[in-house]
Image 1 (cartoon, rainbow, N blue to C red):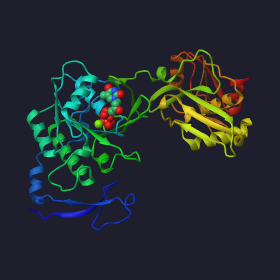
Image 2: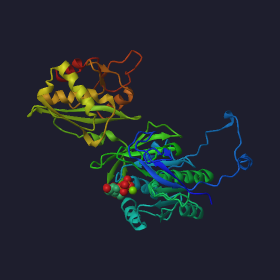
Image 3: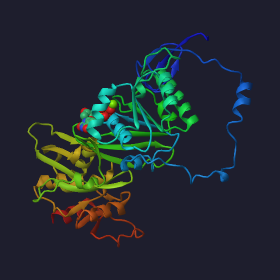
Image 4: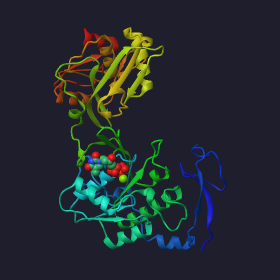
Length: 456
Ligand code: TYD
Ligand code: MG
């Protein structure tokens, strides 16, 4: 047997070093090196590999490769199908990342139970079969014959189970619990994760078996430990949301078989995750009487437009330094918008506390909601409510100009669909045709113009 070798491995990025070092030379993380024992694989001669591997693949011209028949497996869930780019591709390895408790296991189990035309092997290294059964009963009622459950962390045994049961889809929850005998380091360490994933990948590609792999996310928000994982797998999905709210967004970060612009929206309920087909209806609270400090933004997330309520509250600052607080919106951007408001709308920055909240617990990065943010703040400041029939979209620049935003026709369409009568948008060049929209469109180029329209 080859002699065991020890190396120091950065638990953040997977960089290796022969000596312990305090700061990773590759990713800059501090104190991230841990000693790991690696048993090197016995290498066969290059000549042998050369002759044996040549038969498996055959070079063909690009023109002769057909992609029409790239088969997709319908996973029985519209939102998940959408994020996967139309379904699961056979032989694809999908990594689903997310913070603990966000609902990754629920999502995947629910998917597995609903796909009753497929045989699914669900391997859990985190929960006992009894726990999984209890969860399964909460989220699904119906026949569950097709879904096999096993609690296992040893990669070798998982592969044996998979060979014996020959499932159509393999689910592994989670990659951090996997352990191979070939490496002596603890489960969850970078070399274990890397080696186990590589082995699973090889196995899945050989058999054309799709694998759904669950991975945890660390404090910094990246997939715990190895960036290396993201390079290896075909699809990386991130499940995110505020645990205290019920909405969850499934985002595609990498997809070798589709676009990464798609998102899936779910709502966590007593009986598991519910697909949200029309997010706008849920994110808007339908007040009968208009209130000051509330406006509706036509936002987009990835490809999907949705309307979202932006709430602001301003009050006289009780202490010397005014407070700024923001939920779901970047605080630095809020400060910038406040400075623009001071310059353009006579808003006294230093005298006011400002609280901003994006309803529903969503985090919105779309700059297209800027106009709604400033309108809410001003509305609360002067205590005049906006008309509930108005919706806004536009990015605010430093000089108070309203800048064009992406996918404006989709935003307008969504606002029209939900019954808004007017939408305020930036000025677009002549080429953009708004004539087909069934909503009144008002174009503004300066923040003052928007305020005049809103507050007279
Ligand atoms: P889970 O799937 O265990 O999260 P993860 O695998 O990402 O760690 O989800 C756990 C949370 O979901 C838990 O806090 C309870 C909640 N939940 C519901 O609200 N309803 C349900 O039907 C289920 C199964 C879970
Ligand atoms: Mg879990």
